Length: 52
Image 1 (tube, helix red, strand yellow):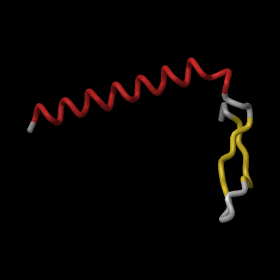
Image 2 (tube, one colour):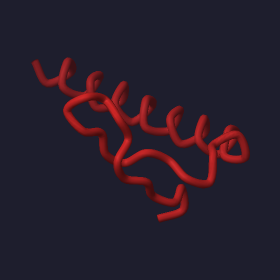
Image 3 (tube, helix red, strand yellow):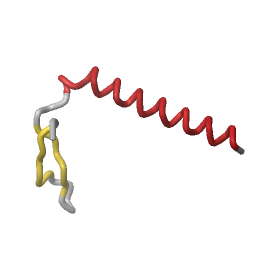
């Protein structure tokens, strides 16, 4: 059971690292304003900066 836990921790860390690498590579493709909230009808009603 202990080795399964260690394997899952390693997999989680790898996913975190891959996500960070993806964000670094794609940073310029992300718009300056991104939606942060949607209402019940799916309309975006709040925006935020990508750097915040």
